[in-house]
Image (tube, rainbow, N blue to C red; front, side, top):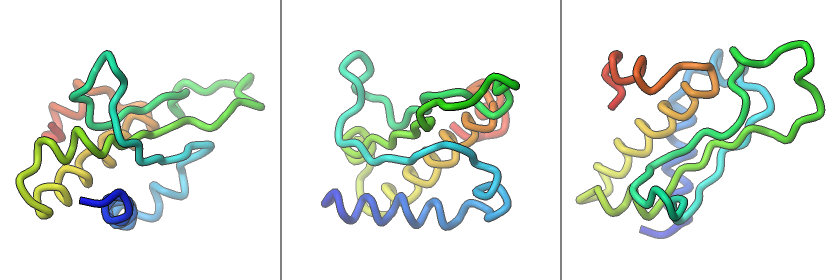
Length: 113
C-alpha cells in the first residue's frame, strides 16, 4: 500500500473521532512514519508529549505533542486493506487516548487491544 493511501486511511480514521474530542486536543500533531523506532520495530503507534491530564500552570511554549502512526509495522500484520483500515482506526484511537491521559492498562480493560 502506498504511503499516500495509508495517509488517507489515517485521515479517515480521524474523521471517525467525535468532533467534540478533536476540539479538545491541544498542541498535538499526527504524523505517518514509515518505520517504528529501532528498539521497538513492531510498535504500531506512539504518543510522545505531555498528556492533557499532566499539564499544569507551567505548560507553555513547548513543542507540539506527537502522535506517530507507523505504516510498515501496521502493513506487516495486516492481510488486506480491510485489515489495514481496522488497525489504523484502532491505533489512531489508542494514541489519541494517550493524549487524554488514558493508560495502556485502561485501554486494554476497555477492549482497545
